[in-house]
Length: 499
Image (tube, rainbow, N blue to C red; front, side, top):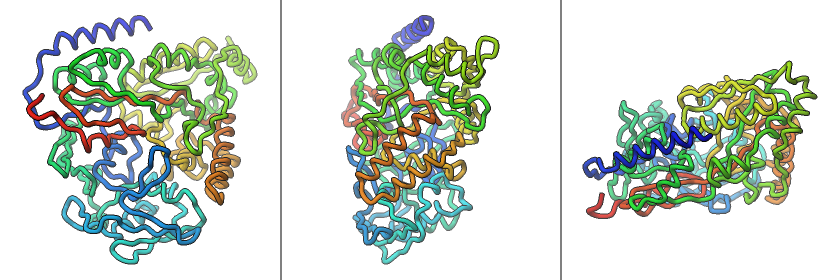
């Protein structure tokens, strides 16, 4: 790891030398991203950048409070029967950005399209309990369910689209029309995406800069105004010492993990996955590589989530146990485990992957590490073209993530069970939780499910990463959200006359 540290120091010297060459002032606030959003159609968005930007452009029926409990956003609701929910628009007269009124008919059209098998939305599987949707008037819509579901309101977080444009097969992916706090301006050929804040006209431009050191360089030079996430510890610490930059940090819920292809003869072997889990020294990585900006994870949900499992014991760092498990599986010095590990080209992710590669090599696992640009990497993951990969689930609020990511009926394109994990026990526990009569009973089923997943290891939990935001000193008002969203952009501003 020492050569990497020297490289970071050398790149930081470049930042110092070039810091004085700032651009001319601009009224646009520029936000640096490590990867472009994939789509601005909320019916298809699954990556972090798309999901976070869509929240700014579209309004959703329901949001979540600090304790991950659903609360009314665009609409309030009442449970008429165990299988019937009524939603009522809270703000009569709200319009889409094209000037057309937002009505209950638009809510129905949005969710009908998600449920249309021909559309192949990845969110369809998580909403398969919807039997029908009825519009009563322009403000009121009923959702009729095929089964009781206490979690149902929290599932309705897809941004609402205008009915007329849905019927016209409008290209929302590149030309979104929503009703949120920001309207779409343009998405240029160079990849830069601009949105405009409705209340005051402030333009925010998302600029893709894959290399973290270059992003920091652009921030210090004034070519960017803000950054969030995807920065190595050395850069965060260095920025924190500068007077011209402000850094915020908050404990996060982003769940980093290693995913596996369960159909693969190597990754599909449970003893191999357990060996990988015991070969990773999470505590050392968090302490020495991540600067303490994470905490070890045992499950997708954090222990303080209402459906989390605070009593769940994690995978201990035990290389001797890892070697023994590989021996039981028929591997050894003359027959080593060989596995292909895919990740993105983000330098920090490559650095972490290189460390994991070295730790796995210590127990006899030969890792062929391959890094790809984000688009290629994410396409491979969604298509199941992997043996092992590393990613993170971001902004998790609802335990319905389990059905979406791990139920046997949620293999792509119906959901995000990309590793083809098939477990009747897991399916039953998810369904028992969904059909439970109380929140306490649901939480009990989800805790048992998380214990089962830690035994079967369709993924190896790594850590929950902290959220980090950095901005130039003249930028104020941004507040890091509980789920790593970009919602702070609704209030951010530049001090008058400052740059």
